[in-house]
Image (cartoon, rainbow, N blue to C red):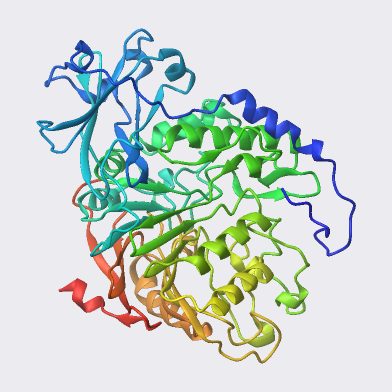
Length: 585
């Protein structure tokens, strides 16, 4: 971790004692982080035999999932019910070219029962090096005569491949208490290559505090943390959350159907979590958020549970001198010569948020304290190098939070309410923007979440008003486009203000959808009255974003879905073409 020479007010401070990091590192060490197995290549044994009539949910209550794709493999994931677990019983895994498993391409057995039990009975199997590029496979686990549900997984194209297209379902923000997952039923059926989740897979509270004035009650969505508290207190609480979320039948079906590329945001840990550089420890919106020792243990537990339950390929270096050096969530994926996808970690490095509603005399970046960061020096430079060095047709940044400015008001009366997004870290945003512009990056796209809205916008070198450097700033050149995916269920602006029903909705939906772009000319589309997901497709000729709205109040496969908005961006141009009518016909 690079030492920062300026504190939060821009004043010099002495370097901190590097030993301040020791507690979090020791917590990570003590967890014996879950690593993926390389199964013994064993076939023809009883471990692969099963009763086709046996109920898979009895042994595999969270079903199966895949993630961490490479050109030659994926990580497969499952969990065995503790009531069915025998540490002496091997777990078998089979991968086939067909759903009937007539052409099995890989078989292996996991025999380390103690390691399985140590990680809440979760299992990850790494198949890197065993599969072919750009290929769909079927897989299943077999345990004690019971087969799991069959999953489908996909590998990445080879680096020198030229895919005709790559399609992502982009997902975010799925508060279990605040709606049903009908959207995931539709995601499971989507013809997409991969799922990209930009964060807030679970929410850390069972208090229902992330509901609004217009929220419904959702029978069957209750939670009760093992600690008995309303906010997470440790590893068992986090594990409980993942088990609960992953028990939903629609979420299970989506993860069975598609390979996941996963990031995280704050709720996988603590609301509005950040790094307190004064104490060299994490902090955030938790009843004990100002207790460095407690928060250190809590965030270590959060990271541990995420690692156990998400089939992600993330580098872990136990010799790193800081948690940021040990655990590297930021990484990139290449889809042949068509798409480079960069994913970042915007929680383990970020400075505390600025004021939620700044006053006119401190809203501009010229008033922002020097040295503030969301990414940290090493990650920022990696991101800039990845974006500017990309040689694929499309260069994509999967960014957890809103990247473009969002202003309410005008001129000196403006406020920037999304301070947990890049409006709270404008100097660092400008460094990235200037680097992208200087390198003349073509076909640059950001995919974001967090704000629980649908957004289609332009990335620019500067924006009118006081957003990027003083009064009277002219409209900058376009350097890219941004597409925000909505929340699956989490509270949006309209729900918070009780504007999602009846006459309130009919009145406010068009007003809000007009008002935000009027105050932000770089924003072409804005909606905060719906929930759902988006599909983004890249081809050699264009990029297309389709935002789907799904009724979260219906716990049924029949939850209504509609194409709310669609935009197409031609290759070589930064022009958002509204093609919604094509997807509503």
